[in-house]
Length: 115
Length: 112
Image (cartoon, rainbow over all chains, first blue to last red; front, top):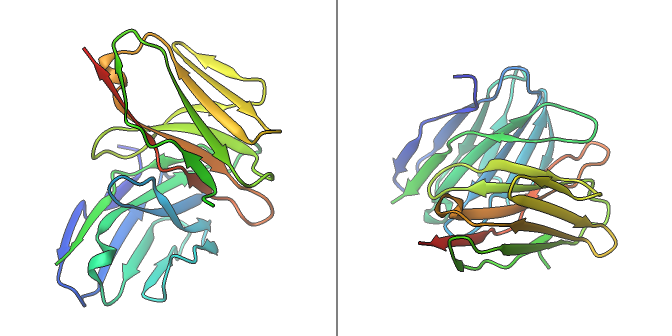
């Protein structure tokens, strides 16, 4: 399968625990995005990488959230001291830089439940 | 004001109906526009890009009005399989910034 891969698919954690999610983008894609989606809402932008450089972070991303893409390939999103409000679907997407069209392909997401 | 606004619906239409979705965006510097489709508990998938001249793909027609900062999607001859959430997406790229901003989505339910 050459699509975007996310692991784990589901994560249940106790409030206050740390969690880490992984995203493996499509291999030739240099752009990688993280989004968060809650029920009834569209995906909310969290952060964006071009290669290994994190070029933008949303103001929604508190200091408990950190993302890395150390070699410009896979990425990890870590949430420290999880809160119930962090429960959501975390989506990763990747795209290849083109001049005009930046279609993004999404992974199936990691569903986080904080209890 | 949200950067991308859509009517959340739901739109309940009979099979064969024509349905139109509208979307407005606030950033006049936005350069690329898309409609994504999201089935229940699945990831969003690209339905079609939206070009300045308008474009059509089978039963689907997308239009862009840059002056009004308005995007539309028209679905003709609705099928049961069209039932999904349709997400309006705007790419605010410029300089180092390149991010896709999603609307809340419009839920379409096509009834037999």
